[in-house]
Length: 127
Image (tube, rainbow, N blue to C red; front, top):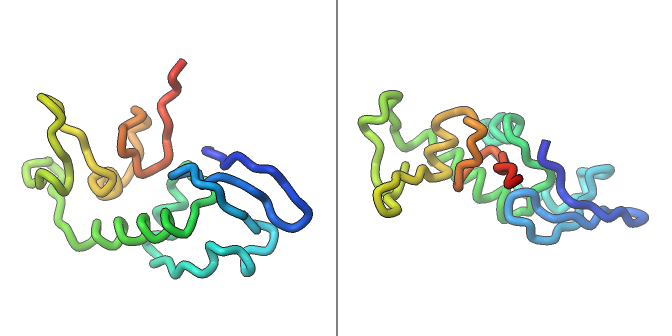
């Protein structure tokens, strides 16, 4: 599980967002008072986040993920890959196809290959 870096104080935990690494104040022990509780997530987003390796996320990342999950329902994807849209599901980098975060969400699971735009918070071990 990808845990956020934390430093505990008396009431809040100073942490970094496990998606963008920006500093956040986490109040997991009093979640109703935490900044993240102000973001309204779709039920699909909550289910998706349950499949990820993310720890605490900043409000910006929560909003981004919520929008991506919502978009993943609105943009069709074929299981065979024949209907992938360049600039939406992938982009070209030289001769290589690089899949977007949206594509990974639509795929529905993490392949654990350390993809550049992994939507599941899996980080390739660089050792």
